[in-house]
Length: 267
Image (cartoon, rainbow, N blue to C red):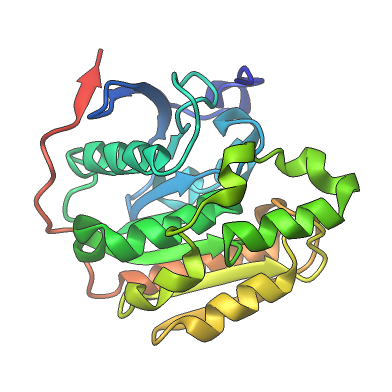
């Protein structure tokens, strides 16, 4: 578990600490970032494997100013969340956060987007494809640098020992089967999906995203970026592309699905 290095208020953002209890009794933590501008929609953000939401805040801190409120969640074993990270239990955390989010008054009747980076993008694909409520409620999915299979990325990292410190995947995840994004991404359709990936990515090669894109059945969009892994939205042009995608995906779409009331919110 890595401690937080900053809080949103230190970069000029209002925020609310959110503590939730999963159905298997694990306390998990997240941040809700409201917008003070006209609300356009909500983004549920799933971070990558390294560190926690305090270091991945840089990917989304600019969105509230653009009219999108954001919910960032630390999986079990990350940041202030209890427990040990593993699949499939981390998917329980993602579902718990999603259920809580849909109950918020500001979220209702506005578009909801699922956005993930790296490991978070890979799990977002599986979640969006298999969770019934997600399939009904999401206006679009944004995948930044997802991989195809857990075994594929493990083998790649093993061959590139100088970058292993960037990933530090738990050893147990190297033998995961049954959750590979490439097997599930076709089921996301017809929900629109945007795949971003840098041609310079030394952690997850661009080919992973290309294979995923080819597997999407419809409503798919791809942006090939530049720069290091996880740094996509430090580039203003990439931010512009994302905002354009969010706007186009929002047209005629509202969140009218009924929330799951089983998530416990810890005061």
